[in-house]
Length: 634
Image 1 (cartoon, rainbow, N blue to C red):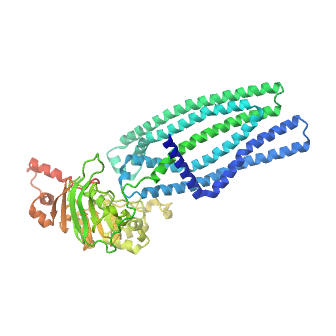
Image 2 (cartoon, rainbow, N blue to C red):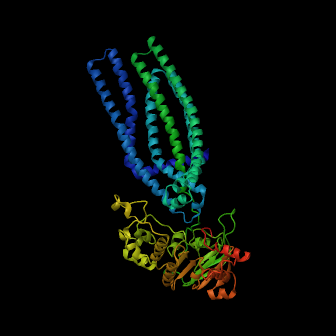
Image 3 (tube, one colour):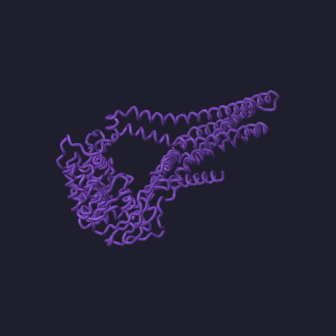
């Protein structure tokens, strides 16, 4: 419970600080209007009592007119102030939503590596953190609402005390079980959101599949609509079953509390009528008592519900605070070692006895890799699926750190270097490159955002990738959106100008993005021609050879004809370096590389007669070559 209280306190402080930093003036105005709103009902009740007693007593006309004027003025204030508070509350909400959203995604961008985004528990927390940002203003406004309710309750409790201390105590005691029950319900709601979070995230996944173009072709070709819809509805059913259980608990608890309130109010009214019959209370006292009991019960109910809602919002907001304060997934040194000044890479990059696995429960992906990438050399990395190629690239970019061993950049351990400083020195195109729903200019410009407005540089990179002529001929040239998901402001009434590129055209656009980062120390090319036809592939590799001449580059490809001109070819097998050398040297060794190169080359020669079937071992070899591709996990 102590830890729980500390977390709620931390969430409350963060919410208050966020609101004050972004909306101090609206918060002050909101507090004042709520104070007026809280005191107005009490003033109306007292003025009404005085008017009634004055009418049945000996009050003068001027006294009654004064009370009436006060009652009218208080009524006007009571009518206007709620609207003013709603307006100011909306301003607080917008300001806090903007601040918390910005801080949340700034926090996710501060994770140096990829590990959090491959952790389902973190992704569930991130989803709840996004929900928490939408509740941030609720924490502040509910806190003020609690003060307003407390002021109203105190005012009417004072009025009740004047009439009957005993009845006041009974009404207050009846609120205690309500508070306990609502807090328990609040905690259960928050726990439920965490429990059904995975199901709701999978539901979102299936709904996205069913509503986006990326999956539309396969869904229609394989008739997957019913299958995916069934999966979606199963996850929805799981989430709704949990919510129904929660609804039943709330219904039973809140029904019992409502019955208790009704019994207390009814009993109090019977007592007041009996007291008026004996002359203990005046008619005005009965009126005041009736209003006060209802107001206290209503105020206490609002107060209890407000506390429960604030508790729930604070718990959700706690996920936001947890993301904001999460430790980085990579150790970033407080006093990082600087990379050498430009030109930075002098000697080369060394992998020294590098081992890696994603967790203690996972198998080893890399097993003692020793590799040196010399400055100015073109190094090719080849291997079967799971050999560790893509994982090695992740380590070079410091998306992960080695489990054992070290990676040295001109002798500097990458773990001693700030990740952003390292990545500033690297350019590349990945096999799973992004196709952003941006304009053509922005799709290339994200390779170096400082150059996004420099159309000459962007077109030069596009020419180098062989895609300038295509992009320039689009309906709005480089300002054409490469998507039909959105429309630009200029084309809101005609979205037909959006263009969807082919796979090969996207490949060249991604390559232009990498070329825009010209002058970097290391270029990583992970299957840069996987989506190209043979003619385009030959053209792209010729352009890349020209671009990377004299520069340090790492090329990963399963098409061995594209790597034969590399200065060094490294064959990975089962997470270790199996062979290394030039194309001619590896062919002379007649090992794995030579066998697979000849097997691939044979596919381009004239095929054997159809009645000549390959032997079973050879058939297995040919099937195995289908796995000669890169994978996202190695």
